[in-house]
Length: 606
Image 1 (tube, rainbow, N blue to C red):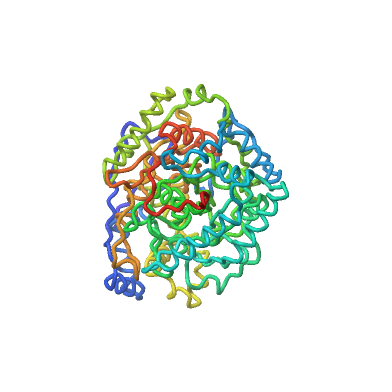
Image 2 (image 1 turned 45 degrees about the vertical axis):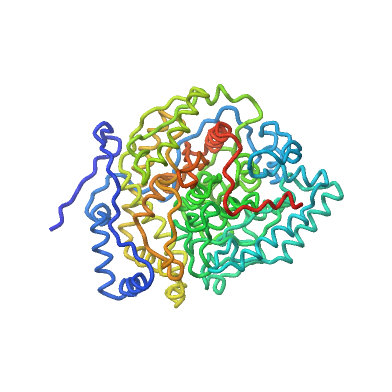
């Protein structure tokens, strides 16, 4: 007989009695033939369910979901209290044109003279900003068509690498040239559509970009789902003159944190080609970090924008759930996923985010989002930064694979407090294991719902082995498990809303480790490594389960030269606050960064 456990109501939990528990995931690390054999055993009737039951028992999943009384009612999608307007912000017109929002965002940015960077080639390495491209186009130093030719050359050269490590899954040089020629003509006529005109952006393969197929990096999704038009966010960017280079590589269906993809080849980390980029938005982060594109769009249902951004040394924004439309993506009906921008700087994130934002009609009714805002970085924001209260759960913050990660993030906080007088407040976040369990049940059930019919129709065996492993886990969850997970979601939301009464943001490392090495045996068949997944996902779950805005910003490198990211988590709808903090961190570290081993200067073509 199983002993039943009963949780106290969340409002009655004594936070002073909460003890942090290090997460230990009990699951085998498998690659190659052993992994393929394990998956086939896992998919067998009777034997497979028995193995999965054992694994879930070892990780205390069934104990929580099936043998625990959870007093809270279920929260099937995030619910938020009323939100006050953030200080020092510019409100964007959600119903206005994307180009007008980009113009408003441009006015928020601090003063900058692109000509100085262009003329002085002796400056330390730095990524070109969108404003640098705009200056080069407007001054006639270069045209979008010239940049397009350089990008096409780099992409085609990358496609010849053995073993394959493609940045893009779908690429059409003629289509890129056509877009670039149209942009060049607009500049020659003195009529660019916006500062984003002529800016090259890659789109993750689970977001619709017409006429490219959306495969989700699988070998079969395009056979059952036809792309007839752009996703809403892509359409908004296109109206601003953005040039799309194609569909970026990813972990198949987003079901992984490394970016491993045996179907097309695994994208390599530009800082260390023998290491993963992180996932699932592997291609988008790598193509930005390597300098080929100014920005990219990824999706984030379990850290999939923030993890690769951190591991590749770029900036990744996960906006509040419901802030941007998901229409036209493979994950358009979930409750944990968003489409978010990746760029090399916070200001470029702001420009792309301004163009693509806008809640769907359904979410405007159900979520009642506050008006979208950006921080007015063009004004003196020292008073605002100085009044910010930063929440830090030290035991959690320091639970990393290497202390180099937590030390670099600690240094960033010390710089912030010294430069601006921000106050660090110690916080406690209860039930982190419960939060992770609720998230995997939620995202797993939503993934299963979206592709299960096709998998049952015979397509499932065409998926990668790690996708098939995930699907076996997801199928083991019952309706009762899903309800229990949503009850936990309400508890976790209660804890965070109480914390945000005391602090303005929560800070953590973005990931608990730097980029892991790619086992050669994992390239052909993939791998399952839940211990690595646990370190990569350790700090990112609240952003997805609760839909909170979060951003990853680079804060240096470990001794091997691998990037480290700091994560800033904000109150509901408080994108402006986390962008302000991220910009402040970026300024403190200076704009000079370590040049990735794989970097291409596509702007200065001479």
